[in-house]
Length: 198
Image (cartoon, rainbow, N blue to C red; front, side, top):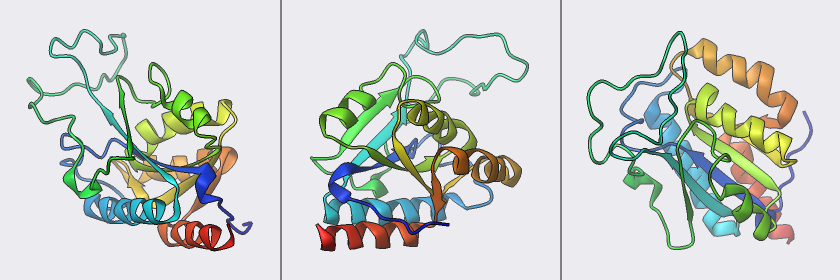
């Protein structure tokens, strides 16, 4: 595993779906509270070193008409109507005025949003990804980012899934082929080291 070197001013911490309606589900192998704590550490490091926080959440219109409607064997259905605050970012993220917020309508954060435009116009070429769920929103975003040529770092302990097997598949079989998998502590250290050498 190569040494992780990050240039904060060219780096974004992209947080996937840490919102009120999603964090209420249990995570595996990492608890939701662990994911939140580690994400907060990444955001604090980003803000103190000059990296760009980007907070992504998923939502839909009241009638659900902008949601995907495709035939599948195991559709993801929500029981009843969604509560009004379902899509709201959790307060622990401590949203700041310079944080970018991206609203998406599907799993991945690129399609149908201005995420790529915001990254390119700010000359951000490296993405640190974290959030919920590892194998859904995070992995979908990672695949798109790879195909667009972005460097990626995955904070393994700042993401989780519905089950340990789904998380492990992404961490072991997908993410090492499109980026680098590291711990929150390693990423925070690399951001701080990058600031000190800038």
